[in-house]
Length: 152
Image (cartoon, rainbow, N blue to C red; front, side, top):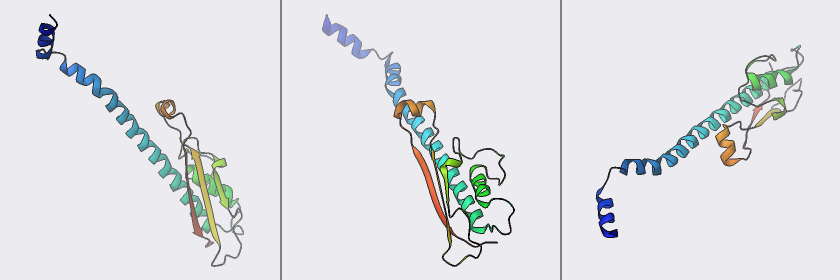
């Protein structure tokens, strides 16, 4: 009886597609979420890099004796929102002024050939709930850049 049942089962292919789908679907789902999360992480890192470079470019040209505003605060605002003022949409979700460091904080009045501005930006990646559930760990993204101080 067992032989007859296995013979009948081996020739019946009506559930083959369902079994293959059940086997492949979890793998494809994980692969899709992984690609989407990796792309989102790279996008946030690219936006952070752009903000850090913009802030360094502004600070390398900022001259305190010609500006009425605080150069460092304007550079931080440019890094975070792309605008020198405090308003605007954030480039990277969760990135705030605590994640930006500018050295030197006050640019020199008479720049020399070795004067440089260094800007560092870091933030914790704001991923989807799936990313947090699978990895459960905070991923820090960051970038730093250095530019020669030119003044205006």
